[in-house]
Length: 308
Image (cartoon, rainbow, N blue to C red; front, side):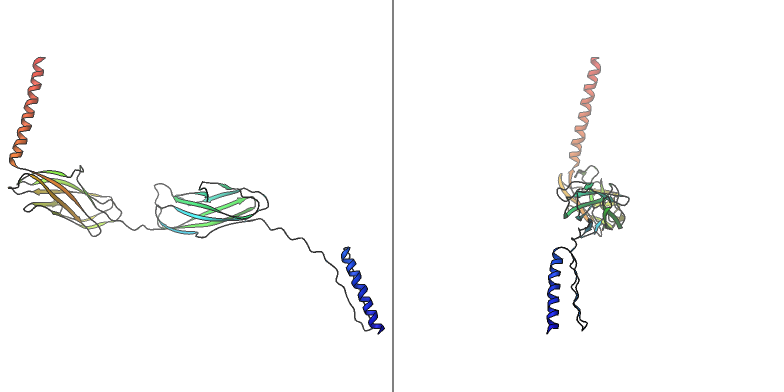
């Protein structure tokens, strides 16, 4: 019985000293040992260390770092700027682009060009924009082009890689048929071959093949094309075509509609002309009028010479 009392007594003393030791910052180690060899240890008290301050860091990322487009188009990337800083810093923004390209960095709002970014000392996320496009007059070949945006402030920096995948633009097809003067009126003599010129133009990027010409005309009229068929017309080229229009001898004077048609494998077009037919009587009147005008001009000229 005395044995257990001594043990309880020693434990009580140990606990009391342990509390006092923790209060005053000391360390107490006691052992109660009996003849049986049992011992009791009171672990030293320890003060918890203060929490470590978070490290400064910056991270650039893009949700869509790869964009696809055709040659000549501009591209815009949205950049996420994550940072944790203790004091105010200025981050220089360095954008690297491949030859033949140009680019700028912009704030998300308002969308103005910036070359540096100065965030407040805290942990935040901001958005930046990167806009890239080919240099004026340069159409990049199909392929991949890499751009790099780097944010640097002293030894704190990060970068993000952006990529543009340029695909070959599909060809476009169009035909245009006009007169050299862009006028759509022609004067014709009945019973004669009247020649007019038209221009066939390929203004788009695709090659046009198997081009044929035809017409809608009044009954009894004849219209012939030279050449009557064109094998191909490359992008940006113009083909001149002679059009021979023959109204019948008995055609009455007046205006008649004519439609010239062009068809190909990829594009079609037409040109509507207003044909004014003049009979021989009309042509005679026109000739007389011209002669009278010439004679009148000569009379006036001779009179002026006589006065001198």
